Length: 128
Image (tube, rainbow, N blue to C red; front, side):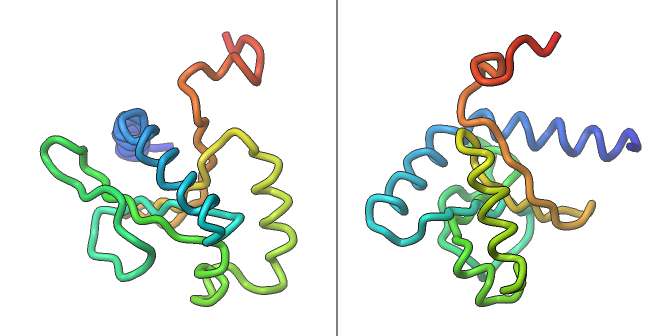
């Protein structure tokens, strides 16, 4: 991985640490209102006409904007193909204590599962 790629992911991780509470609240609303059983948060640094804005990038919020979306919208827009839905749901459910993120950057589009809580060792043991 190049130095630019590493820096981009470190920048993303820094912003995500600040976004945890907002992501948790948005996910809770989506689940409580039965909007979806599979919330997906789109992180981007450009204009986006998908999902619902949750966080807009700015001086106090960070360099990434976040939109709340769903598996259903991803299928509707053919980002996740219908024949891959079962596979996606299994992967999603395997990451029970994570936020599902769809990250759009100059590095491409990637699905990342980011831990809900700061302390990774709670679920995964000591990583050192």
